[in-house]
Amino acid sequence: MIYLVGFMGSGKTTVGRRLALKLGVPFIDLDHEIERQRGAKISEIFRVAGEEAFRLLETQALEELILGGREAVVATGGGLPMNPYNRELMKASGTIVHLAANFETIRQRLAGDTSRPLWNEEALDLYDSRLTAYAEADYAVQTDEREIGEIVEEVAGLRQLKPVAVLTKPRPYPIYIGQGIFDSFKLYLKRHLRVEGLFVLADENVYATHIARIEGALSNTQHHLMPVPAGEGSKSFEFLEHVLGAMLSARINRNWAVVAVGGGVTGDLAGFAASVFMRGIPVIQVPTTLLAQVDSAIGGKTAVNHELGKNLVGAFHQPTFVLSDIDFLKTLPAEQTGGAMAEVVKYGVIMDPELFDYLEQGEPFDYARIVRSCSRDKAAVVAADEHEGGLRRILNFGHTIGHAVEKASGFKVNHGVAVAQGMRFAAWLSEDLALLEPMECQRIAGLIAQLGIVPSDCALPSVEEVAAALALDKKGFAKGIHFVLTEKLGTAITMELTSHRILEAYERFVHGA
Image (cartoon, rainbow, N blue to C red):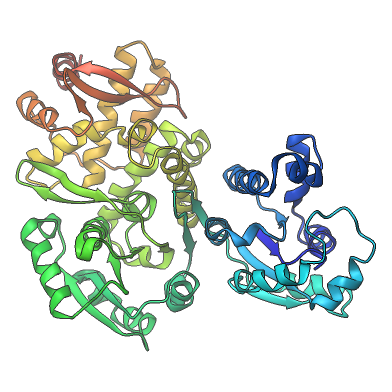
């Protein structure tokens, strides 16, 4: 998405139409879109409802445009960037270009124009008041005394950002996806934050493998780096206290940010530490595993484990941005990539049949495509249900039994492998409840087998171990569990099932019923 911002008369519509034609994407004039939706001219909306009501319509139209997910050149209203939330929306979803013009140029362009409700004797003051907001654009392109074609060529040649937007409130954020993008970390940081320093938690294996890249990306920044031992053992109260102590010893304050460089363990730990340190400081997620890039780094769920279960103590703390560099995946052990494919399959089952079809075609896979598809899927769910009050529960497809598999193994079984086992049961139970056609159940089990996610020696937990896991499940209610099922590929539902009903079905599943 390319957003053209600037004062009225700066040429946003004229340049935007030509630019969209050159790039082969749709052109959207946001003011015209509002007029189309409301069946009234902007001047009429101002007259009848007032400017405040119009600004709400403007934000709503921008949100709907972003949720639509299509690439476009967008000409915004001159006042839209004055709302900080609107600026964050644009940063989260595309590239912002300020078409700048001197006020005298604008006066000449708008001479005799009576259609603009804010073009009056106070326009110069309005112009001056908006310059600070326009200055937050990624680029400024001067339009005074220039041909339209020349301006279009300059804008078309600018480096475009194409993040996946996560529309959380009050602050949406982007997921940047690409190869080698971590090397430009400081540019992304500057786009979103002005901080005194960075407290970096880096997985010890990632740091050892990518030490030159990490140090290069952080060069010339004030930072304190702390390695995180690999494995679930680092997601503990004991290690969290160690991290917080290190932050205090380093004299970190609320003008710093935490950066997580690693997989789900590092991301969860860093996010939770950031959420509680001095009542909350920003966190930036740099996921280096496929599992973290498609799932755990997105959505703000942070936690440490308790002796009674996984992720039982935590908080929702959304990142400032997520930076998913596909190059990190090249050094992952095969078993980590294989296990992570369980979460990818999950998205295909619950909401993305096109992704499921793509996976069935087999390797080699385009991991940038997979990460982008999964990021869009999860972003859509998080935007609709940030705190897991309803819809977001569908992301737990396969996780109820999956957590039991992990706990029964002492957390030695890879999370993805555990979720794959859980999905096999969830699909089987969906068929058993006459929700899912047998052929589609077979496709789900077949894809899990085709991808080789579950090793032959991965045992299912006992009924007693599953019962213990159900008792601590975060999706539980007084009489049972909000269990995630599927009616057909690309859909998911939650059904209230008693623990007795689940355990009875699970016992039959284990014994091949």
